[in-house]
Length: 398
Image (cartoon, rainbow, N blue to C red; front, side):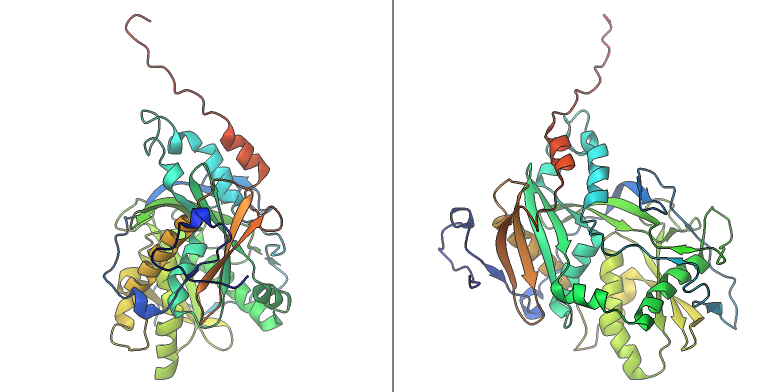
């Protein structure tokens, strides 16, 4: 079926479930004022262990422990331990939203119970969008993305809109044919984290251990973009016990690596493309700083630089080919409106697949069950059960 746009006066989408509307992505259409974005607050957290098993606690949280300042630079060897001490996550396993759904199931009473029991008031979860931070990051960067498309599956269940990424055929082909040097580059990013983080507050990093990318600490956050309540989760690299504010997410630090820059062209490209993704990834959860390690051709970190998230835009403010935070956030808000208006039927087995390729609009198609349905039976069944009544407050007569 060919994609079509909506026109003024068209009948509601709910009466035409087979219509495939579209959403334009041209940056010029989203250049208005910065939309309202609620300061993110952490609702909770969870950890994934060496076997990728879920734990509803902070056991995988690591602590920021940078090296002493030196004129020589840290000289971290990012190739050390590769491939002998490397346990990469099995990328053939499509986890979808499962870990976040596990957390939601455990904390359902806090999110949607009666107002005297709930942290958010009655029905809060029913109006929210639930997804991973990485999916929202892709939405933010879409108006400026020129290479990689995406697909997001969406289902509505008990009023809540769930968004889960679907691996595109191009992304799958790229993953299966990933050349050795790119696999090593992925390792080097995780190795940098090992050099910069300790397992305990005040501890020292131990780069002699295994790099296991199954292990993750994830923050679960609440925010609102425009009139869209958001509940999303994202992996956190570490917490800084010396941060001005000890409260998450403002105590969190994002760690990144990038190759050394020498020419003006290299710097311009870095600010236009890589810094945009760093900004989107850190701005959404309210992480205040990205600490970057710049590596030389031999794979050693030669210097460290801190990029405050709120100052990243300054690097491209006067660049006509640069990015604009307002465009990113306005497009994301427009997509959320588009998705909420499209996904009107409350049915966990009904999936709307939003697809986008650079240069075109976002299109949508409708599917049922496999292969796109992503809300597992265990979650649907558990959330369909009535909530237990809150504990009764004893009266003076009791």
